[in-house]
Structure formats: structure tokens, C-alpha cells
Length: 188
Ligand SMILES: Nc1ncnc2c1ncn2[C@@H]1O[C@H](COP(=O)(O)OP(=O)(O)OP(=O)(O)O)[C@@H](O)[C@H]1O
Image (cartoon, rainbow, N blue to C red; front, side, top):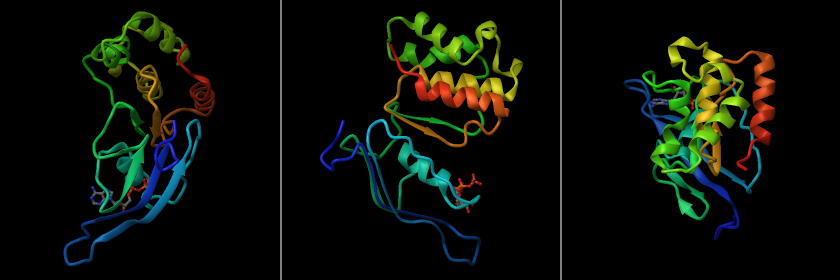
């Protein structure tokens, strides 16, 4: 879908500073960032540690506001988080008191989705956790937890998927599998 600006996602002159150390001036992290993406596009943002990649992602997600500039997604000014813009973090953020199955079905239930069991089963299979449906997060390895986090987000079929080095805790083989899976995954 295009919007009034002609872009699916538009990052328009986004700047961000953070307080510096006591007595120092503010830390300029993002300076007039412009970027746009069309539907279906995959964009990777690379840069040295501390250059502001996560900060930009957090602004697109609506977790933090920019000092200047704006983010427009599907014609709407981003001002807060939305399930339309899902985020997978570097380390998995799961509900520790819920099983794999319940972590993945949580968002679907809240949304009142039908066919929850079919969808959850499918995504558990895709991320290769078939025999672990009833395990709790602390019974899984870091990479397995990350796969649950990915399935939990993808099952909701978000319009925008923001990933902050989500495969960092996976081994090379799992990383390959996960990348190809997420590129080809789509609700049917
Ligand atoms: N809440 C905050 N308060 C103060 N400074 C912050 C805050 N968040 C980020 N920063 C600073 O902003 C700069 C950019 O951080 P950010 O996490 O965006 O970098 P990054 O490019 O994602 O780094 P990495 O690749 O190491 O994860 C860093 O200097 C960091 O210290």
C-alpha cells in the first residue's frame, strides 16, 4: 500500500540526541536521517557499534520519539508502538511463565483470531520446535528462545518487521534457516 507521500515507510529528516555525560554536550546520535521503503522491500542498516542503528529502529517502532523529523508508516505518523510494526530484539523477550505454545498464541488470542491452533502449530513447525511446545523459556537454549520470539512475531503477520540483530544468538546454520524461513513465510 502506498500513502500520500508515495511510500510505504518514510523516514523524514529524523534526528536524535541523548543527554551526554555530566558537563558534556548532548550526544548527537542521528542527524537528519532520510529513508524510504516500498512494500515488500527488505532493508539492512549497517554501521559500527554505537552509530545509532537500534535508536533508529526504536524510533520506527514508536518506542522513542525523534527530536526532529518524523516517521510515516502507511500514511500515518508514527507516535507510539503498534502491532502493525513488530520488533524482534537481539535477545528473546518471552513471557517466562508461559510455554512455547502459549507464548506464540498469546498475541493471536488477544486479537481474537480464529484458527489459533492451526497457526501456532504451523509456526512452531517452521521454526523447528515441534517437540518443544510445552517447554518453558528457561528450558530452552538462547537460540531456541530466539526462534520462539521470531515465531511469536511472524504468526501475527505484521506489516512491518523490524529486526535488531535477531540472529546474533543463533549458530550459522540456524541463522541461514531462519533467514530463508522468514523471507518465505507468509500467511496462507
Ligand atoms: N537511552 C539512552 N540514553 C543515553 N544514550 C543512549 C540511549 N540509547 C542509546 N544511547 C546512545 O546512543 C548511541 C547509539 O546507540 P545504539 O544502541 O542506537 O547504537 P547501535 O548502532 O545499535 O549499536 P550496536 O551495534 O552496538 O548495538 C550510543 O552512544 C548509546 O550510548
